[in-house]
Each structure stands twice: as structure tokens, then as C-alpha cells.
Image 1: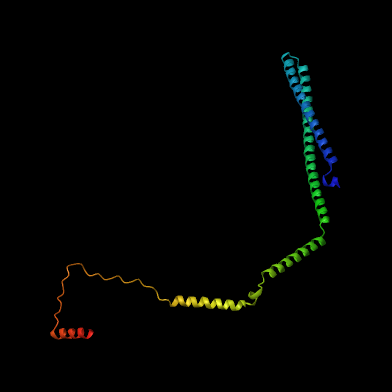
Image 2 (image 1 turned 135 degrees about the vertical axis):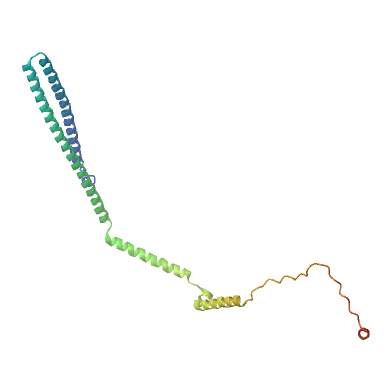
Length: 217
């Protein structure tokens, strides 16, 4: 089970060991290639010296050895290319294996969780939750229900009475006369005012006034 969950460490170790071996071989081939390149260059220098010494036969032998060294360098280059190709394929296979192991681990974990969670248990739990919710709803409704004298009030009658009050208030607002601002007093034009002459009383008016005074006494 643990090998399925955490992958296969032995295979991973083998892959890493193989990559290390390929790297070591690649380094060895590169060092050998450098040595052969130096030997080929040395044969060229020898051929030049024999040419200057008019030793044509020895110069040709040097060039032949140079060719052999160059062939070996080319062969080592092909070996390195194959090792690089093998390393790339191995790294790709390693990544693929790790991906598959990760997916297998996820599938195993999901399967284990599904086994731990039974569909019947889920249905039972949901039924219990629904039952508790319904019980709580009934309790809240019972607590919010009116009791005593308030329970006898008819909600429809109260609504109708409220509508009548609102209608009467609106009608009163419509019938209320609009308030007008008081008219400003008319001021007489400024200027000197003439004293009006007091009308003279007649003799009959004087006698009438005296009679009223006596009657008042």
C-alpha cells in the first residue's frame, strides 16, 4: 500500500543511478576527445617539421595518424550524441513514471476517501440535518406566535383600519386650504399732508347731543 501511495523508490533509485552512470561516461568521452584532438594537432606540427626537413615519407605518416585520430574524434562525437539521446529519453521516462505514480497516488487516496464515506451515511446525515432544520423552524414559529389578547386580533381587520386612517389623512391634506402670505400694508406716498377741515355741527345736532347726554345721566 505504501509503495502505491509514495511511488516506487527502487525504480527511482535505479533511474538516478543510470543517469549518473551516463553522465560519467559522457565526461570520460569528452576528456578522451580532447586528448585525441591534441594528438591530431601534434601530428600536424610534426608533418610540418618533416616537410621543412624534406622528409616527405615521414610527413605523410604523420598525416595518416592525424586522419586516424580525427576518425576516432568523430566516432567519440557519435557516442556522445547517443548518450545525450539516451539521457533525454531516460529523463522523459522518469518524468512520465513520476506523473503516473502521482496520478495513481491521487486515485488511491480518492478511493480510500470514498470507502470511508458511504453514500448511505451521507443520506442519513442529510436526513438528520433536514429534520433538525425543520424542528428548529417549528420552534421559531411557536416562539413568534402571538399569545393572550393579541392572538384574538384579526390581521385583516387591522390592515383595513390602517388603510382607512391613511385615506382619511390623505383626504384631510387635500382639503386643507393653502396658506397665503399676508398682504403688505399699502404705504401712502411720502410728502406733506394737509389737515382736513372739521365739519361744523348744526344747531339740531347740538340739541340732539345734549338730549342724549341727559338721557345717559
